[in-house]
Length: 304
Ligand SMILES: Nc1nc2c(ncn2[C@@H]2O[C@H](COP(=O)(O)OP(=O)(O)OP(=O)(O)O)[C@@H](O)[C@H]2O)c(=O)[nH]1
Image (cartoon, rainbow, N blue to C red; front, side):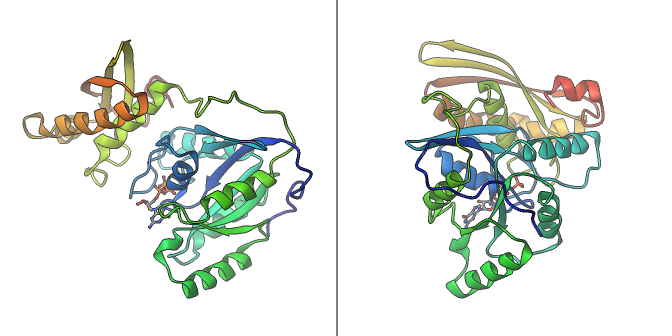
């Protein structure tokens, strides 16, 4: 059972601000929900587990408060040094937030993964809400069953069903999360949407494009370093390196006569243009960093 939540929701009308994050097993819909709330592509979503790498914050401004969303990668059994660092990162993030939304998909049975995570959350001081995601995928009856099952999983402060895809109840979820934030002055300036440096966001967009279609072959083997961003009026020149671990992986990423790499560039460029609001010239190089996932020096260089 989850411990007492810190500070119950109050309705004193004062300004509240604080940090929140979504947790849950892989594919639970955390990134999609984060994006739906912030309203811009700031985190990376995919149909394959464990692709969210960096802790990315989105800042949601409301008249009565400010919700800072932190996006964490999923907790999983570490097999490499990278895996261990990711888990440390997840736990460190969890201990710093005020509100945690445990995401549980409406269309899948509650399993060991969900129990494991809710057990871990019991140790924290944050208020824990259950968020039943992907409600558009199930009928009323199945949703009712899932809500009941979730209520038996732990003592959640609230249980909120949402669909990030249809937008149903997303606004309500934000309001509920806001109620559990501590009274606090504004934490970030009004015009701030995310404090993640541009080059990390751009790197994530490139990585996402590079993984498209080859996730089964190279799920964790691609890292991206954005070397240079040169704004030139309405054009931005970006120089980036895509790191793989072996030459066989390099061949996959580049494709026959460079066809895949070209596709990756086109797709990433479109996304980056949307992010920056300028035309983009993207210069991509594929390089080999042998066993970068196991080498602390390489990991540091690649930003982990
Ligand atoms: N139909 C439907 N699909 C959703 C919804 N939210 C997420 N999905 C899909 O579920 C899959 C996983 O979503 P993500 O947001 O990447 O899940 P995640 O929990 O961030 O996954 P990890 O990064 O692997 O931990 C994607 O294919 C999404 O498109 C939703 O509300 N409705």
